[in-house]
Image (cartoon, rainbow, N blue to C red; front, side, top):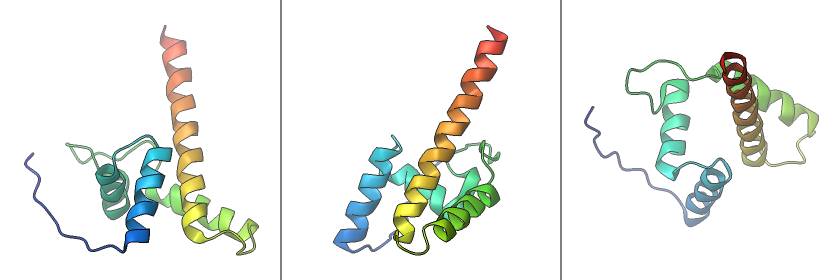
Length: 101
């Protein structure tokens, strides 16, 4: 599927933050932006949902933010929640692969 360019204006700080978060999640910055803009279906050519539903991600962020009592900035909590969910997804993939092998 052909992609088209969509302009998005960010501050230098926002751009650096997205770059750091993408690096932490081991993905390209554009992929991270697409995931945040489109939700779980981002990056899937057939539009199928990802491993973790967007609702679960939002619930994880909300729960972590509540536990932090507002001391951690929301963007930090989002980054941590995304990293944890990615690890859990990978563990599930690894366990499924081990069961088949």
